Amino acid sequence: MLPVVLGICLCVGYVLKNWIKDIDNKCIPTVCAIIGIVLSAWLSNWTVTPQVVLNGMISGLASTGLHQAMK
Image (cartoon, rainbow, N blue to C red; front, side, top):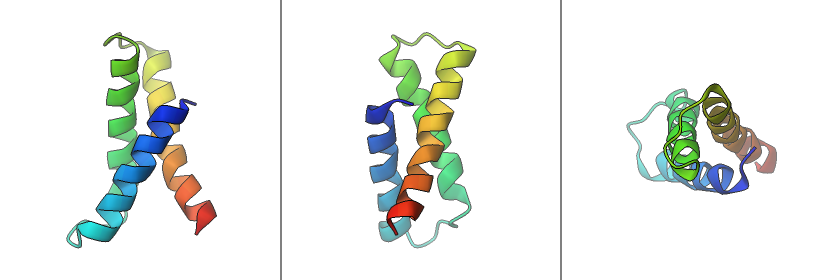
C-alpha cells in the first residue's frame, strides 16, 4: 500500500462525496481505484506492471475503507 496514493484518493473521494451531488456512492470506489492506478504508475515513472496496478488498486480502495472506518 502506498500512503501517498491512499491520502490523495481519500481526499478525492471526500470531495466527490460532499461536493458533487450527482455522483452515485457506488461509483466512488471505482474512481478511487482508477486514480490509485494512475498515481501508482506516475510514482513508478510510468512503468505499468501488474504489481503497480495492484498497488494502485489496493491503495485507492483502501481509502474508501479508511473513510468508512473513520465514519
